[in-house]
Image (tube, rainbow, N blue to C red; front, top):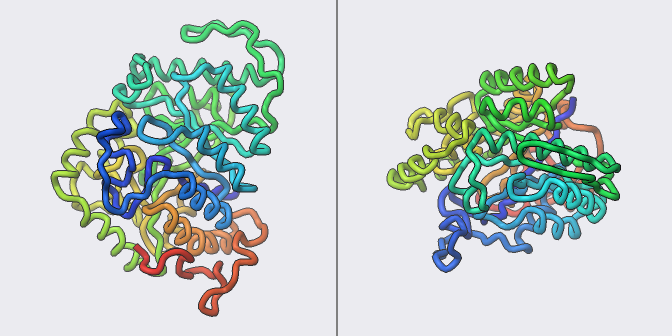
Length: 401
C-alpha cells in the first residue's frame, strides 16, 4: 500500500498568515464589502496555475479544490487548469444538495473526457446551515446525509450506461442515463464524523477522509468505518487532511509555526472560535476540542500542531518538524491504514516546494511511494546541488516563512 500525496488549491485566496488570507474576506457574500488586506494573493487563474504546475512538477498526484460561497467554483476552475497541466489530477469538492445527481454524473463524464481521466470527486455534505441556506438548502444535518446517500446511489446507477430508475425520499429519477459514462470512473472521496455520516461512507465511497487528529483518534475512525463497510460487503480506503510546515531543521519549522501564531491577536482568535463553535459539523467540533481555543499546549501529539484551528475552519492541524520528522508522522498514519494525504501550507506555492523537495524524497527512500522517475528530473541544479536533493531549499522562496 503506497502513499498517495495530494496538495491543496486555495481558490479563496492565499497568503503568508492564517488570518485574512482570503481575497473574499467577508465570505464572498457581498463583493463590495471586500477590503484589501496586505499580503493576500488573489485566487486568479495565473496564480492558481503556478500552484498546479508546481504540484505536478513536485510529484503530487492531485490537488483538492474546495467548495463554498467564499471561493471560486471548483468545477470551472479545475477544468481550466487541466488544460495547462498534463498529469495532475483534480479532487473537485462539491455539494450534492445544490445539483442534480444525474447532471453531476454527466458533468463528471464530460470532465473525464476533457481532462483525459484526471477527475476525482470530493463530496461535501455540509456542516454549516448558514452556508447551506446561501445555496438555497434548508435541510437539517442528518437529512443532508440521508440525501447524500441517495445522491451517490443515483450517480453510480447512472454511470452504469443503461437507463436507471430511483425512487427515494429526496430523488425521483426515471430512466436516468449518462450516454457515455466516464472512463475511468472517478474515485469518490467523502468525510464526516457524525453517526449519520458513517453508513453513507460505508455504502458509497471509495476513500474516507478525516481531518488531522492524533493517531489514536484516527485509528478509532478507521476501525469504525472499516467495520461499517464490512457489514455492507465493501472495502473503503482512507485519507487524511493536514497542513504542513516542513523545514531543514525542527527548530526552523517550529519557529515558522511560532511566527504564524504571533500574527493572531486574542480578539481574532476569540471571534473565530465563537463562529466555529456554531458549526453543526461533528468533525469541526472535534477539531475545536483539540485545543479548546487556548494557545497553550498546541502540540497535541508529536509534531502535530493545532494552531491552525484557532482561526481556520475545517482542517485545523499541521505536521510541523524537520523533513524526516514529518515523514515519520506520515509513516505512522500510513501504518494505521491511511493511503491518501491531502496536504497544504501557507503560502501554498512555497510550502509545496518545502514539502516536495524535503519530505517527498525521504518517503521515496523509505519505499512508501510508487517507484518512478524523480518529479524534478531535468530541473537544473542550484548552488551546486540538484533541486531534488533532500533538505534543499525551495526554488521559489529565500526566507523560508
